[in-house]
Image 1: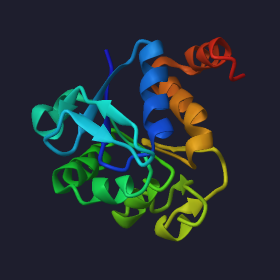
Image 2: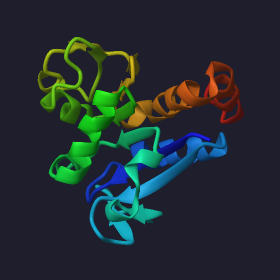
Image 3: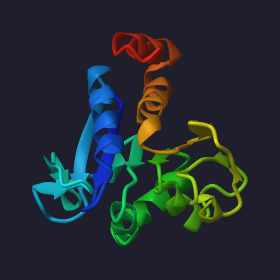
Image 4: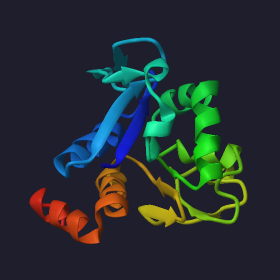
Length: 182
């Protein structure tokens, strides 16, 4: 079974993070909500506090098939400031394992050179951070093992893209219909 991890730092964008968790779990994917700090709950950029499954120190990164970074401010900056997480994002990229980011979080990939030569998208105004990328205005970009998306309004297609990678396009379409998305 595929195992995914989505990382939460104070100031994360609630809809971007929780939509991914919800849709992945509805489809039967195992996804852990991981706090980058040693806390049980993390508060989003709009004051919504969510209980985590694990903390960064409790996970074995080798057990995961994808790392997911939600956007939001200052959540994106707080994720990028977490050295241990950034080391693992780099390691996943080097191994060709899936990494995904939405909204402002693709800027982290740009800062680390992970979208160089790839198509990528992000929240409007952050394109200059996608160093070396072909920045697009598509809702979602899948470029090899790197998935990026634009923001809160693209959280559903972002989550469905993740589902399609692990469970196939048919399952993603089935889920889209079940949630009255398409």
